[in-house]
Amino acid sequence: MHFHPIVVGALYPGITRGLSADLLAAQALSGTAYPVCTSHVVAGDGLVTDVLDVPTDTVSAQLEHIFETRRPSSAKVGIIGATPTVDRVFDHLRSLEGPVVYDLTVSGPSGEDILEQQGLEAIIEHLSEPDLVTIRRTDAALVAGMEIPSLDDAQVAAQRIAQQGADHVLVRCGKLPTHFYEQEGSPPDYALDLFFDGDDFALFEAPYLDNLESHHGASSGLLLPLLHHLQAGVDLEPALQKAKGRVSEALRARRQDEGGNPDATFFATLQEEPTTAEVQD
Image 1 (tube, rainbow, N blue to C red):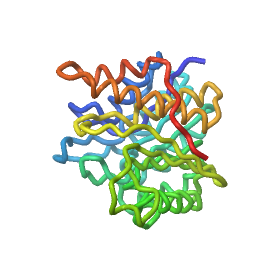
Image 2 (cartoon, rainbow, N blue to C red; image 1 turned 120 degrees about the vertical axis):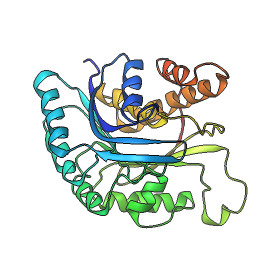
Image 3 (cartoon, rainbow, N blue to C red; image 1 turned 90 degrees about the horizontal axis):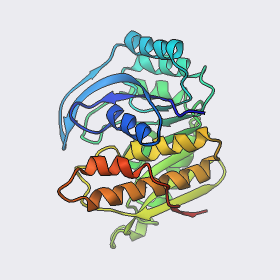
Image 4 (cartoon, rainbow, N blue to C red; image 1 turned 45 degrees about the vertical axis):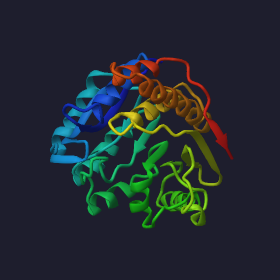
């Protein structure tokens, strides 16, 4: 089956983030993504100029058009925008036969506010519908209502998010000490993703690559390959392992591309066969 995911999210003009990154990642996987714009965000490098949500009826019209004229195979949902849009997006996606990955995003990486409390409450009503809910550590702290200074705390946060309805949760932790009392020491030299399936945890490790502050699109580089594997019938945990290995290689290639076109190198590397990320149960 061809890889034709719906990608729901924000448009960042001039930055390879959000919808533009999703489109490039899908193309790198020999697929064609169908974009649904929910918000227009003028932001980058820590500066936020403007955030404009697309009207709910316009978002709905985009989804209706896709289902009427295309045959989408799966979906990756990111920033949803206005609170009334939440119900409308998930209502449309119920008719989709393929997998759905939801990247629950409360605050943007440049500091933009993109989800109010009422919107979060609406989202929680739908957390059981995606095949996987992924979330950055900073947003997981907001959704779980707690600080996450260590991996121990991330496990509690993942359980709290699961208790709110999510069947499978992936907390993208970044560099994080294992225990609270270790946070005064040197941080680990690897990045962590914590997966919780409702019963057990799995921990995915990959080398932490610094000096990537200007890079955008890493979440697309992880979640589009993940969605591709899920659509092919791979189970969640091995699909995560493969996707984590693929994006780690792409980030490494990007860092090594000094003076070239690092974004192009990143997405080109996504085309290659992935390595396997280290996983701990």
